[in-house]
Length: 259
Image 1 (cartoon, rainbow, N blue to C red):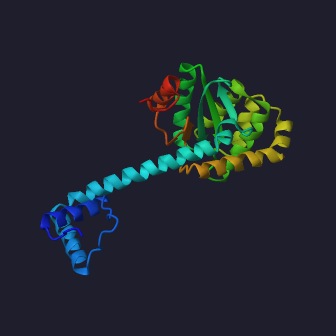
Image 2: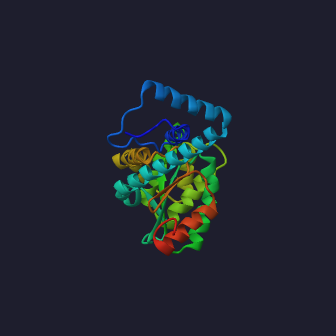
Image 3: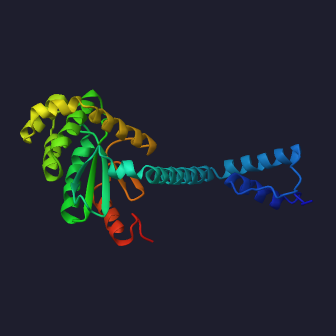
């Protein structure tokens, strides 16, 4: 039986327990009530004397939670790769056969998505092997949903650069975007409006938006824009430089971070 009577040892064990490293060895006797109270007292006394430890513990907890969330998202990307990268309900810009895919989940009423549009243009110009996948993720109200429906129907008629011009035109609007604004952008892009109306009423439009919402939920996306590149999920308008580094790493080693 181990000797827990040494004050130094008891303090060490208490601090190890606090840090999450204490594991009771197989066959060791459990602490008595008195020993438990003594250890709790040591912990309390130490924390009162060194409150900065709580900040360090919280920082470590935050780090572990973020790491666990990233691992969970990475698994979700792997499990849903075909839907994320190769769904029939999406528009593709850039190199349709590119080896590197950058998926953007966006909302036409998202101000950060409007800023990010310029970043996507620069990435397209700089990386000829980049395949940009656009996924309508209408989370900012009914107007966004209506605009997404129009966009999904436009994608039946337009693809590649032609679709991107429609996308830029609509996303570049300063006012709130709804059905009327989306229809105007479609008409200005040369879309057959009669066919557009029929396509908007067709089942694939609803199915496409529903699929995006489902996969976004699996990826635990909390806002727009959000991106998927490789197995990495990036939430927020992180800027051109961050996205560029990830694309460059994909080119270099097939991962968003090269060791």
